[in-house]
Image (cartoon, rainbow, N blue to C red; front, side):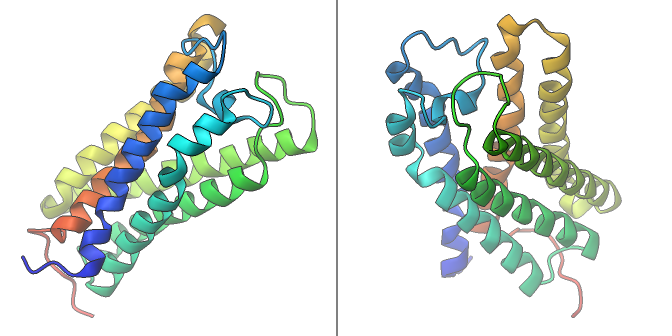
Length: 216
């Protein structure tokens, strides 16, 4: 295909995934005593965390590239009328989730590492997390339904179902497993959205091939 600039921008979704993965894997090196199996990923970027500087360096491309990729995916599917209206609404909600996540967590980072939520800033962090989870769930469910109804986007619906399952494992698992394994199940949730964003970015790079366009 003759790729346009917007298609090439889709690769930023893959770059965001690689940047986030690097931050999750290597930031603990700057956090003495960090236990990835018990502690949340957000502990690494907390304001008082010793790993905050390294996290910001490794994840520098994550936030910006995630928003850029998700927004361009949303613009592309709308302008070219990819698949059905239901499919496009799911994409738009997922893009909105990325904006809420980036802005919300920048405005209200955790004040300190750990599980205790005491200050207004930490409460707002939890509220942002709830909005991010809600938007993620709704968008993924809509894309799963769209995939069930339309064979042309079934592959995207299957990936959305996998991301949704990972999110459920993270959410339900945190209430079932002991504190010693909190970080393990929590990582299912955080990587579900980041991974799905990378998949959508790759689809944008390829121009969402094999999917019909609705008449305007």
